[in-house]
Amino acid sequence: MTAMPATPRDRAAFATLAGLARRFGLRLDGARVRRTSSRFCFGVEHGDYNGTALLGVGTDRFLWLAYARNGTNRLRLCSANFESEGVVDVDPSRLAAPKDVSGWARYAHGAAAILAREGFALRCGLDVAIFSDIPGGGMSRSASLCVNLVLTLLEANELAVADRFRIVELAQAIETDFVGSPCGVLDQTMILFARARHATHFDPATRAITHLPLGASAPPFRLLALDTGTVRPGLEASTYKLRRAECEELVRLVNGMGIPIRNLAEVRDDATLAAIRDRLSSSRPQLVARLEYLFHAQLRFAELQRAWTAGDLASLGAAFRADGIGLRDLYRISGPELETMCDLARSVPGCLGERMLGGGDKGAAGAIVSADAVQRVSEAITIGYPRSHPAYASRFAVHELDVVDGVTVFTGLP
Image 1 (cartoon, rainbow, N blue to C red):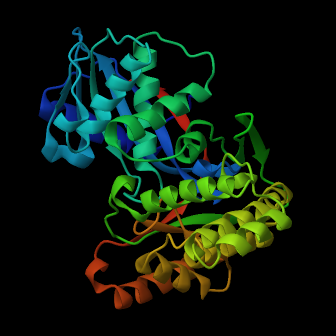
Image 2 (image 1 turned 120 degrees about the vertical axis):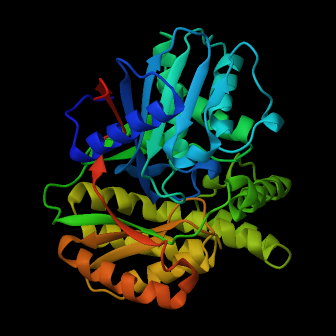
C-alpha cells in the first residue's frame, strides 16, 4: 500500500464521491480514500483454478472508495456506478442471507458476512461512497471492489492479518461464498500485490509473491484494454463456470486412470499428456483440448517472465498472442466481439500481441502495443469494430493503460 499525491483523475473522482455522498445524505468529513487498480494478466489466464503460476500487472483503471466513521454500528454505502440502487444499509449484527440481496449490494453485504464468519468482528460503522472507471468486463472490477472493501473494513475496525495473502482469500470468498461467482485468486492477487513498473509473479505451491522489474532496455509501449461494449454476465452465468467444471471433471478422470494429480497444472511432461490424450481424446475431446491449452500455456510461462525482465517486448507479445490463440481454439472461452477486437489490433504493425482478458465470453480484450502504434490501433478499431458489431457502436472503447501500484490511500476528501 502506498501514499502519493492525487492526480487530476483522482481529484475528479474525489469530486464525484463528494457529490454522491451529498446526494444520499452520507457524511464523509475527514474521510480517507482507498484506490484499488484493475489488472492485466500475461499468463496463465484461467490458470489460477487449475494450479498454475500467474504473472500480471496492476493497471490504471481504478476503483475509489471514500470512507469515514459515522458514529453507529452500521455500514451505509452508495456507488456512483449503480446510483439507482440507492444506499446499501448493512447491519453487521443482523447479516443478510445471499438470497435476500441483489445487485451490487451483494458485495457490501458479502464483505460483512465473510469477515464475520472468519472471526473479524465489525464494530465500527462507516459511511462509504464508491466510484470506478474500470470497464465492466475483463479487468476485474468486482475483484478490485472486494479487495478494497476487505482492506477498508479491517483498517476501520483496527483488525490485522498476519499473512497478507489472507486478504486475497477473504476477497475471493465474498465472490465465491456470498455472490456465487466461482472465481479463482488471479484477479485479487494481481491487484493487491501490484507494483508500478513491475510484474507480479505468484507461485501457488508456496503462495510466494515475487516482483519482477521491467527490463531497462524495454522500448516505449502501452497496454491497451479493448472494451467491446458488451455486458458480461457474472462468472456464475458464463462459460467460465462450465470450463471450471470441465477441468474438475478431467482431474477426476485422470486420477481414475491411475495418474495421481490434484489439478491440471501437475500434468507437466509429454508422456503424461500423451497417455491422457490416448485414453480420452475419442470420448472426451473437449476435455483434452482444455488440458492442451494449459499444458502449452505453462511451457510459455518461463518465456513470459524472461521477456518481461529482459525488456524483450516482441517476445512478450508473441507469447501473449499464442496464449490468446489457445484460449480461442482449445479452451474455447472467447467470444465474437472479443475476437473482432483481436483481429483488428493484430492487423496493425506495432501491435505486439493481443488476446481476450478475464472470464471470457464478453467484456474486454487486451493488447501489448509499441507506443508509436497506439493511435493506429485505436483508429483501426474505431473504424472496423462498429462495422462488425453495430449494436455496440456507441459503447466500445480503447483504454491506454500504465503499470501501477495496486493499492493507494489518500488522506482527506477535498
